[in-house]
Amino acid sequence: MSLVPLTVGFVPLIDCAPLVVAAELGFAAAEGLTLTLTRENAWATIRDRVMVGHCHAAQMLGPMPIASRLGIGHLTVDLIAPMALGWGGNAITVAGGTWEAMRDQGAAEAAGPARQGEALRAVIAERARSGAKPLTLAMVYPFSSHHYALRYWLAASGIDPDEEVRLVVVPPPFMVDALRDGQIDGFCVGEPWNSMAVAAGIGHIVMPTTAIWQRSPEKVLGMRADWAERHPDETQALIRALYRASQWCEGAEASELARLLAQPEFVGERAADIERGVSGALCLSPGSAPIRVAEFQGYARQFGTFPCRSHALWFYHQMVRWQQLPAASAAESASRAVTARETYRPDLYRGALQSLGVEVPPGDLAAGRFFDQP
Image (cartoon, rainbow, N blue to C red; front, side, top):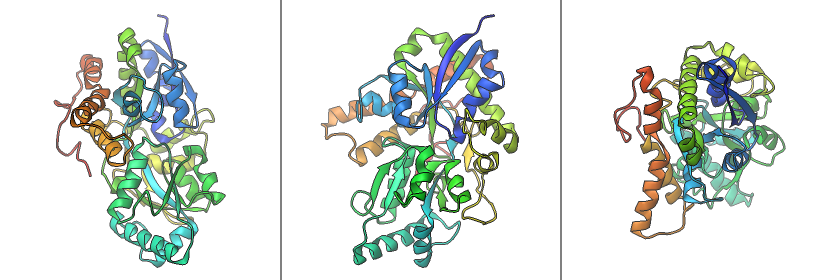
């Protein structure tokens, strides 16, 4: 049987694991596919390569296809997300000097978001009184869970994210270098880049973003809607391959998965540092002992691969809240919400997995423990 070749883009993060496992361990081949994985450093490049047809599909940030369909931040392109690629895996990290200032104001290692936020607010107020420039905090892309988690935490802590700090975009692989060079004071990014900053002796992990929203939605499988319509068999095969790969990731030893991701063509960093995020045993500061973070990151468990439309709507409402969308009438706002909701395609997910007989949530907007929002 000849295999159908597909090109799939990814960014070097631990949650690219289902793509790597599907390509390397035979799950794609079992579905009649051969995957060529193309590594990109920036999310904007991932978006553009799918838009112009260089990639058939890609690992994408959860809000990215929504923003593309709404035509904000770039061209209007009809992208869809027929599958999620897991949840969690992100953290907020600050430079050593910023952490020392926060600790002087009451922050503590492994403390919750309220205490850490109160300390950061005091640091920001002191800097304003002394005439120091605002802290610069980085996130990976304007339409990302990282951006919205960072804003959510800042606002809940009494910090105006548009006035009292400076938010900038830095691609994930460049975060550590930007922190080392003093260009930024902190960031919100996925693993292994938080652990890489700690291992380099320049960063302190303030908290995982799952402390803000447990099992928070993350990456999705993104593709053009017209490609999925023209290639329904390949779309279903890819979903099944990634589903099985995600299950393998859940059952694998953390060290085994870390060694696979550590290969130069994938994440390309030390397996020991990658294993921190995979296992959820994070070292929060240089030289500290690892701390087990419960439910730090998941691939398949807790319906981690289901493209839940309540998540799509939450992302849309963050775009509205933070004025990434222009003002609109009630009718236009309702239409936008429908567009956002229908970007996530549980119908395609169910259709692909029907032959496997796996459990799938009964409703697209299910409420309850799996889809709680902050």
